[in-house]
Amino acid sequence: MTDTTTANTSRGHSVAPGDGERIWITGDTMTFKATAESTGGSLMLLENLTTPGGGPPPHIHDTEDEFWYVLEGTFEVTIDGEVHRLGAGGFAFAPAGCVHNFRNVGPTHARVLVGFTPGGIEGFFRESGRPATDDGQAPPFDDAELARTMVAAPRYGLRLPGGDGR
Image 1 (cartoon, rainbow, N blue to C red):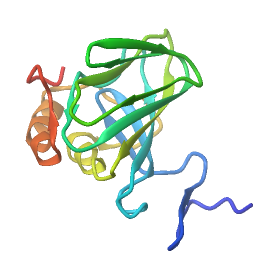
Image 2: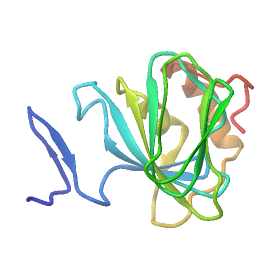
Image 3: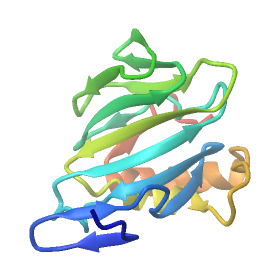
Image 4: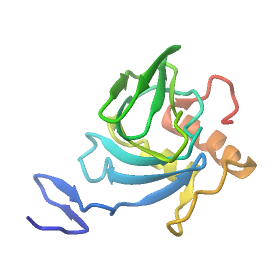
């Protein structure tokens, strides 16, 4: 088995453990594992290191389905008002067009894989968040991130029903 940083071929894509582009967003750290570019547009997959109480506000994707697979910790995933409490190994799916979000409800950092089909939403994360510059804690969500989010969201078919990303 080859352990490479990133490998792209005409038949597939791989990322070594711990590797991938890292973004700080909503106080959490995302690590991109697959993007539209690396999958021919098929999907986007990220690992989210989520602070206690962390996760995005309720939102709607007009074009992407979203799914979650819990790696560590306990999350509540809300899909159209229905709350699903998931521990390690738990899975949830939200089709495009429904209001949803996830939240780490445990006392420590937790990890969840978050996927989107088709890919392309990673552009929103890049524009709204900021590149992670070290292995430290992500900075808290602030007014500058809110402003970036409100500008980028319409370009990626993302809506915040409350109108505020907090």
